[in-house]
Structure formats: structure tokens, C-alpha cells
Length: 460
Image 1 (spheres, one colour):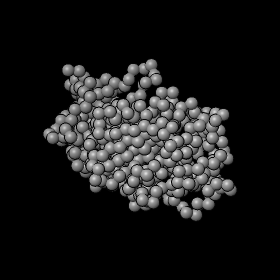
Image 2 (cartoon, rainbow, N blue to C red):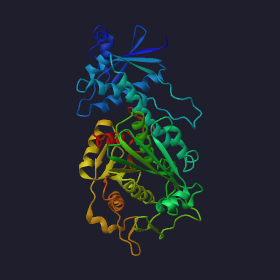
Image 3 (tube, rainbow, N blue to C red):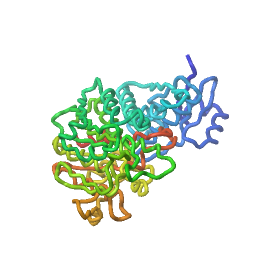
Image 4 (cartoon, one colour):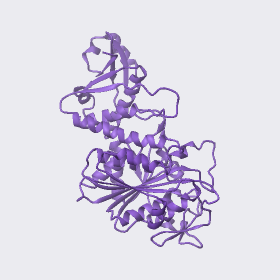
């Protein structure tokens, strides 16, 4: 047997019988401490934060321990459901097991595709307990879905672009009950997806629409998940300024979230009726690129003046919202790395959620439980005239230097079909993170769990 670790808590007899170990633990204030006893590495859990949303604490702790043991090249770690019950007594055992497994695998996440170093050493986790196989597998599925979102966001625009992205989705969903359809430029023209076509004019890669349908229960209301898939955003003719623009490869974070969500729902065989819409495009400055001052006429007859080509996400999401209405969606959620203003408002730990107030609050509750934290934001009707245009129905940007995320939401609201209950998630502030808990220094994979859990919540 290789190197082994056992996860215990501060009430374990091996602590009370070992004064040196007891003193060692009391001197450390982190959530877990490592100590070798008779050749066996003990991982002692202590100082666990109690609170209403303890499952996130479980995930963060598990991710931290997984990385600690990986650095020591420990082959296997064992933890019993009895220990988890004792440490996390405020939470149902099944939820704790799923959260611990999820956090463990996410903490082990590594993305070294474009690096010369070896992949992170991963310690294998064993949960000792009866009848928890289902919870363990669900934890693995949730981590895998979020990891898929991370992989997509971390990849380079050379490898992930409007030409290759659809194939990645097809390959990932192969073998599931999800049905994947890819629409090319000629079909987009027939469908009159003029926002998507216009934004993609400057790129060598033609834009694409991918529709993935999953019917775990066709009798349920149809939930449409609409993701912004800008695989690289230069800003277009309104070229972005900055020293470090490599994160603009993550401007498809909304589409990545939708991808992780549909993967999780399909692989969990969830009893939902969902269609995932991916608006995939690259925003490049070229002689054929869209120009400030151009006007887009959408399929629903609305016309939009291009005030700024760097406000391209809302232009393609408008097409997605129209399409969701054509498909008869009862609920629609669009998600995007849409505005820097949301990061100014909420920072790097919360996404903003606009739209139906009751559902926005439900989304917040789900995020509190699953770790994809978000906050309900207002749509202020008094700001509607900020989008006024002199020669089109309205502009794609505000004529005021304030309320940027709100006016973006107001723009999208104008394209929401009347039959739909709508939410807009602006995740621009939460697309990447530093290493902490089950997060590593890369893309977060935000939204995969949030959208999947939301689809299940509104389908009950």
C-alpha cells in the first residue's frame, strides 16, 4: 500500500492520548492540520465554521485538504461518514457526503494543457460508510460538470473558437440523452439571427448557434438556458485597452456555465425539460467588422444602433432570447460575462441577477447552498431613456456614465418573450479566482451548478 492519510476530528482518541499532538493542534488555527502518528498521516479537522450554508464550508474544507495531501503525494485518504456526521452535525449526512466529494475533486482540478509541468498529484478519496454510493457519484458528477466549464474557459482562443466549440460540446454530450444541433452561418441567415451574424463579421471564424435539448421529463415546463459564447473579445473596432487581455478568452464564460449545467442534468438523468442555447462568436476588428453607428434589425423588428462594438454580448443574447421564445420556453435564463460594472458593484465573489424578483431571490438561495453566490439586482425603469437613439429604436449602450449593468439588463429585457419568466445573470466579476478552498488559480466554472439546480427547482 502507498502513502495513506486518515481524516479525523478533534474528538478522536488518538489526540486525547497524545499530548504533543494535542498541543500541536491547539497552536494551529487553520481548518485542518496534518500530523504523523506511528507512520500514519492524520488530517485533523478543526475550527469548522458553523452557519446556515454549511455545505459550502464542507466543499471548501475538502478542496483544501485534497491539495494539501496532493502536495505530499499521498496516494489515498480515508474519511468515515461517522466523522463527517460529527464535524458537520448541522447538515444531513447525504448532503455532507456529496459536498465533500464535490469539493475534493474540484480542489484537485488542474489545467496544464499548455504548460510543461506535470499535472497536479491527486490523492484518491475513500468514503467509509453504508449506502452513500449515490451521494458519492453525485458529488463526482457535480465536480466534473464544473470542471468541464473550467476547461472551456481556460482554453486558448486558438483551440476554442466558433469553429471548434460546437465539436467540443458534441463530444462531451455523446452517450447521454441530450440532443445536439449545430447551426452554421447559412442557417443563421435563414433564421435571421442578425445580432450573432453582425458581431461575427470581423472574424475568420463563422459564428454558430448550438442548441442542446435534454428531456428527462417532457411534461415539465421548458427551461431555456442561454449562454454568451464570445470565444475572444477584442472589443472590435472599439478596441479594448489594457496591459493584460488574456482573460478575454473567458468571455464565453456564460456558454461554459450552460455547458456544465446541461452536462450535469443529462448525466444525472434529471427530471427536467431543458434547451441550452449557445451563441458562439469571436469579436474581432477587421475591414468587415461591425462599425459604431451601424444598425442591426432583429427578427422581432426592433432596431439597435451600435454605440460601442465592445458591448457585443447583449447583441448576441438578444438573438438567444428571441429563439427561446420561438421554442416555447416557459422559463429563460441568460448568463454572460456582460459588464465590468457588475464587478464594481458586487466585487469578485457575487454575480448579479436581474429580472423576475421572486425567481431572482430563489436563485440567490440556490447559490447560497451550492456555492455559486449571487445577488438580486434591480431593473430601474427610470433608466430606460439612457438607451435612447436618434436614428434607431434604441442604442446598445447607455448615454450616461452610470448604472452600466442595469442598463445592459434593460436592453436585454426588451427582447424577452412575453410568455417567459426571465432572469439575467451577469457573471463578469466571478469568472476567475485565486487559489482558495476548492478553487484554483484559473477559471472558476461559475454557473454550472447554479443553472442545473435552478432548472430542477422550477421543474418540481
